[in-house]
Image (tube, rainbow, N blue to C red; front, top):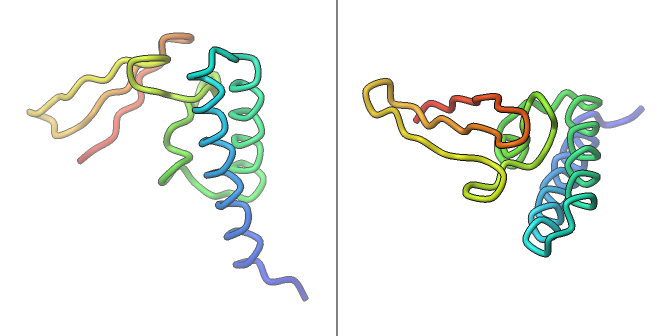
Length: 99
């Protein structure tokens, strides 16, 4: 019988590796490669139902692209609501994360 916890841990590690590779590719101006890495990470997240915590929170929910502050997204802080707002520069979607 398969160990589901082991499969999820491996999938989570792969998502972290893929987001790191996407970040490196993005800084090297290889947007197509970064988009591919982000798409693979998003497919792993949805297949294994990992949720959006940790490294997977760096992906846009709408277009699936890597959210790198200052490069592919803008970050604002709404201190009255105690949340950070990430706005994707490609699709315009806002993602709110409470702190």
